[in-house]
Image (cartoon, rainbow, N blue to C red):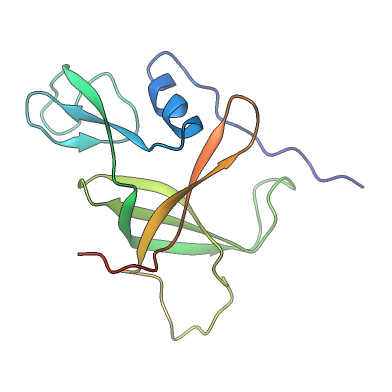
Length: 142
């Protein structure tokens, strides 16, 4: 029996630069021209100051885990449990909801991923979509 197909995002005119960057192995984020803060998810205005002028800039792809959970009962059969879902705060100050890959989700309950240094890793899902996941970083981060 084959596994269900993973649902993939459908890029819009607004989010297309983000997804094109992922295909190129670059994590792009919007930066507000008014307050200079980065924000994610793609939006027509800055959630910090409501400015509508922004540019797409390349993010370092490095950050730290803010919070996470282990999913044991996925929403569809397309996902293979257990897996880690997390909020990562990137060096540029924005948060991203993502998966942490290549970790043991059922590791010692006394250990925690909160505060762990991570870096982006892209996984090509189709001809049009590469998804940004995060893995534990081996190098020191600030």
